[in-house]
Image (cartoon, rainbow, N blue to C red; front, side):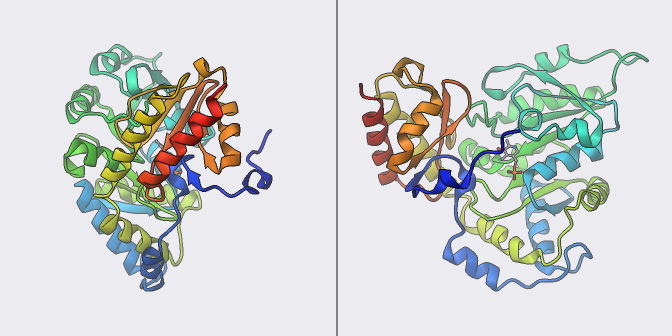
Length: 354
Ligand SMILES: *Cc1c(COP(=O)(O)O)cnc(C)c1O
């Protein structure tokens, strides 16, 4: 099995990191909030800062309760394990993170199957969901969960509109299924749509949000839902080794992020729009119009694979990520400013020139 990347890949300094919004470094002010955090034993329920974060997150998302997790991946895996039994079928977009990027966790941990649904921008319609509903009989796998991703990562950072979520959730609930939202970037969607986060997620039974994407914290995610659901989720968190000790140190960074780094996500969206405009001017690069902070593009007409394009940028201190043979992704976040965007576009132009 290949086990990339290696240390050698990081030997050259990165100046303009468009690889991922997970690459943000905690600011000095965020670290000071961490230093000042009151702490206890998270696993035992005595860490006051973790409690404060869970209360804030539950209120923000309009759910009864929340639990702090080490990662978004664990939120998804714990949610699947809590919602489903072995043999169940989950309905999710075929490009969903839960399907493509979690090392087969739903099968390995929960014994469930995922049926991939199609739809543009990583979003599927209520009609597509309806058409995938199986008859309830002794042959069919029980269909217990519908999963949606907000924003849809491989869909280009696209937002599910509230009306799209509602119509999908109505079909799911009419068939006795629950709806789980992978809300890794749900606050990007809330800012973009101009809708309160609790209203964006109102039709979802469970939802989590990530603090390590555009919010800029070093670690952590929160999973929210009903009191009963979170109680059951806690057992899976314990089982998978996700319970923490002095979690307050990290929870303090997440609280800081909620207080200071949400509204500014609009800056990332503006920077992504300007990056997309600049890249669209480069001969051979075709850009998908971004909705939030992810800019996907195609390098084929430049006579380069996305990996070759990335390799040419790297010596100039610019990184992007490769999504497919000719599809690449550039991502804006709080460590990228407008000047860096301009410079990155100029470098991209120079490395594609023949
Ligand atoms: C990053 C991401 C995850 C996983 O979150 P981690 O905190 O990195 O484990 C899940 N879903 C989507 C859509 C993501 O972008």
